Image 1: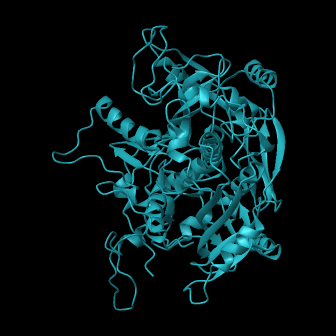
Image 2: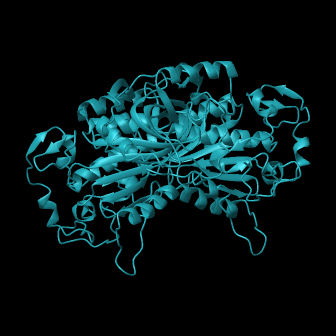
Image 3: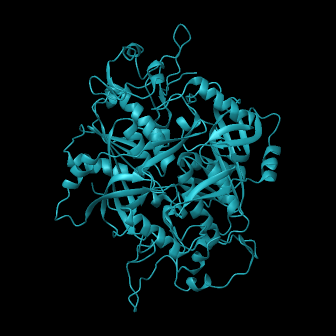
Length: 319
Length: 319
C-alpha cells in the first residue's frame, strides 16, 4: 500500500509506489545531517524536534492535517511561514485569514481564492496568507494537542525559522464584561497550578505552561486608548469542561450551589485569574516545550461573576 | 438584548424582545410540574436532569448547538428521537445520516434534503433522520463533554423517552488489524481505571465509565459470519492525547523508547484492552450518570502493536 496521500497507484520496476506529488529525488535532501545549536533549533534558526525518531523516518504522515513529508513538498508550501494563528472554529479562522489578508496587504494572484489546505482531513481547517497560517483547533486540550504536535512537526519539515504561535479565542471573563480582550501572562489548570499534566505510558508527566511574557507585553502595547474595548493582561484558567469544570450552574448535571460557585470564582479572581477557557494550558505547555514563542489572546463573551449562559449572538474577534 | 437565536429584532409594548421562532404561549407549558420516578426519569420515561436549576430557568440556551428552549420548539423538533449517534467528524456524521436513511427506509418529503441543524454554531454538525440524530463530537474528552451536556439537556427539553446513545468512531487496535469492529464493554483511562476523573470547583471528582453490557452483546449478535471484517468485544482505553498519551513514537516530542512503548501496550493488552481512542471514558461516564443506555463501536485504523502512523487513506465505518 502506498504510504503517501497521492492518488497515483503506479508502481516502479522494483514494485514500489511512485508518488505523483513529490519526486523521489527530494527524499535524499531531507536525509542530510543538519547542525543544531539547541534541542529545539538547528543552526539556521529552523525548528528542531525533541524527537529523534522523525529524522529517521522515510516519511511522516501528518494524519489529522492530511499532509505528509513524502507526499507534499512542505518546504515549498510552508517554508515562508512566520506566524501560526489558531482558534476554535473553522469559520472564525477563515474569517481571520481574510481579515489578516487585508491588514498585511497580502494580494492573491488574479483568479485565485483562499483554499482550506486541510480540507481532506475533515478535522481542522487551515488557511495560508503569505507568512500567516490560520488554523482551527476545535475545542479542548486533546484537540489542540493533536494539532500542535502536527503543526510543530510541520514547522520542522518545512524548515520554518523561529515561528510565533498565537491562540485567538473566546473565554469567560472573571470580573470583566463581555468584549474585553485578555492577553494571557500564564496558563493555570483548574487547581491553579501553572502546568499541564499528561499521562504518558501510564505515568503522570508535568510540563510548565509558560507563555512569552515579552510577547504579551508587546501585544498589550498595541492596544490603543481609543479602542472601543479594554485590553488587559492576566492569568488564564484552562478547564477540561465547559459546564461543571468552570463552575457553571446550567449543565446537564450540577451538584454544587451558587454559593459554592461564587466562592470558587472569587478564589480564582484573588489568585489573579482574569479569564477561563479550554485550551491555553496545552497551548502554553507544548509551545514552551518546543521552544516556540507563543501568546494567547481571547475576547470575553460574558462576566462569569454575573452569569453562565452565553447570550451574545455573535462574537467579534480582534487582536 | 434578545436571549434567543432568532433573527427577529422586534420589541413588544413592554420593550421585550418578540421571538419569531417560538410563540410566547409555549413558555407556560414548560413550567408545569412533572412527576418523576428516579433522579434521571420522569414518570412517562422521559429524560430528567440531575440539575434542579434547569427547570427553574426561563429559557436554556444550548450555545454550542445554536439551539435554545426559548427560541425553538424543541419538543416538536426532537420529541420523536430514539437514537443519538455521535462520531468525530462532520463529514462522517453527514455520511452516516445518509447511510442510516437508506437502512431504515426513511423518506424525506419531495424537494427536501438533509440540513445541518447546528450549522450556525460552527462547532458541531447535527443531522436528523426520523428517530435518529447523527452528530459530530470533535476530538477528545472536553469536546465530547460539551456536546453530551447539551444533547442530554436537549433530550430533557424535547421530552425524549429512553433514548439510546452510540459513539461510532475510529481507533487503534491492540493486537487487531485495521478494519476490525470493536464494541466496548467498558472504558478505562490511561492508568486502566474504569472511571472518568474531572475537576469540579478545583476538587477531583470520579464517575464510573460504565457502558450497557446487554446493549454491547445485542450489537455483537448483529455481526454476521459472512462479514468481511471481525467484530469483537473488549475494553477500550481512552487517552487525552494522540501521540505521547498513546505511546506513539512519531509525535513532535518523544521521550521514551520503542521497548517502553511495547511494554506499555502489552500491559494494556494483558489487562483486556483491545483498542485505544480519545472519547469513550467521557461518553461512558456522562451517559451512565444521566441514566442513558449507551454503546461505543469503533473501527480500528491499524494494529498499534505493528505501527503508529495512520496509512489508510479512508476509513470505512459500519455499525
